[in-house]
Amino acid sequence: MSKLFNNYTHSFFAYLQIEKNSSVHTMKNYRDDLEQFFVFMNEQHIEKLSDVTHQDARLYLTTLHEKKMARASVSRKISSLRGFYRFLMREDIVNENPFLIVHRPKGTKKLPSFFYEEEMEELFETVQETDPLSIRNKALLELMYGTGIRVSECTGLTLEDVDFHLGVILVRGKGGKERYVPFGSFAAEAVQSYVELSRLNLMKNSNHKVLFVNYRGEPLTVRGIRHILTGLIEKASLSGKIHPHMLRHTFATHLLNNGADMRTVQELLGHASLTSTQMYTHVTKEHLQKTYMNHHPRA
Image (cartoon, rainbow, N blue to C red; front, side, top):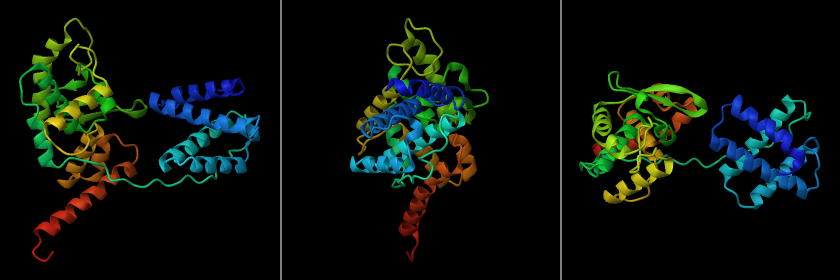
């Protein structure tokens, strides 16, 4: 990144971290997006951020399309630059935001992938053994499916975050927001068994309070959970690929299919906006249509 922009970007990332409480992943995306735009500025011989015009912004959008980038990636990059210039205006570094009226491409809506209840039963059948890792995997599967928490939220759980008496976990979500999420008897029994029978065995010489650990007693990572779930789906002989977010999608879809209201699901998932939760209505409508076609005598 050019030295010319170091002071501005340093202040911007401090703003994102302190005021916006952005995640590490979000900060990395912003950094990548800004660096790519600065390369464009050098190619166009634009020396100052204040010299970027609306025409330059549109030209940059065109170059992104010419590189055959996905719509979602292009949209994010424009959003990043719009936010960066909004910050520069707030700091009186520039007078206008050239990306303000650049239209972001609308991404194609993909229905969230989820497991049917029968498939979940098959997954649970793979974790019925009594060795320490199977006990841990069962607790992991039950808790993620039973609460719908994000995989990053799961890796951040500590022993103190689990309240077996009240049947809730304290979850630290995006932007440092905290919420309490209830869990049922299946998850409670599985996690309690893991804590009492398996975790101490796995900890060995480690000493920390992170709930889920690997075979060396170290905190389980996002990558580690993905590896565990991939192993379970292969063991269950289910088709397709699994990613940790599928359990979150499954949690929400099964709740809505069984009559839960949208606002409750939104709160349980920790969505800031109801719009994020509404994507699951497409899945539940598909489920209703399939049920109707299979069971109504005049379908």
